[in-house]
Length: 245
Image (cartoon, rainbow, N blue to C red):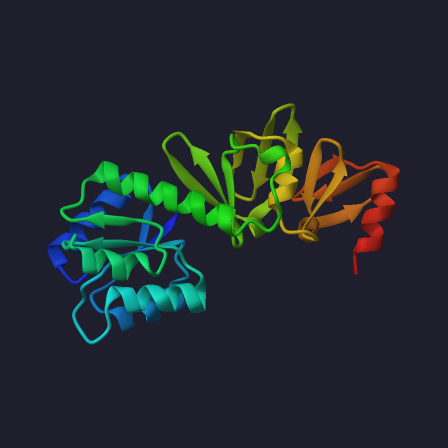
């Protein structure tokens, strides 16, 4: 299980340390910090964070607003602006880039937490590869790029899709089995399938979605995934065999 990875670009060292302390107490991971925009871009390229916190006014020629544009254009990483300035001009310049949040310093932990969670949810919705059946808004799994973000009490935790072995349905709940742990959440299997990339996951049985990349063997009525034998019905087995290279 991975934590949500956050990049912090802030040129005030004391403020940066305070932000890092806040987000780590919330259960997120700070994967890198920078005081200049270009260094922040280099780190984003190398570390591929899930979210960036950007001070608008930075040391050097480039601003946080410039960095936001590069993150959106090149890497499609959501970002939240941090600033000590709440004047009309600064707000207009920042909001023109369509940020996922805008916070005034000094930061309060509760406001920062709310902004991060809202940004993740909005980014997931905007980047969903498939519509969610029936427009269900109670789902607690967000699909962002190559990962699922699972709501765990007061925060999202990250499960990389390639780590998932299979997903088992139990009525209105699903169990996600990965190489590290099992997660249970209130979600239907149908909704989970809609959030996953087509071709990587296959419904072998009414109660199971399997990661086709983790298949170890297929027999007449079962498929072995991640060391576990799972049931597969005949017509699904034939369909799966036709999908495999």
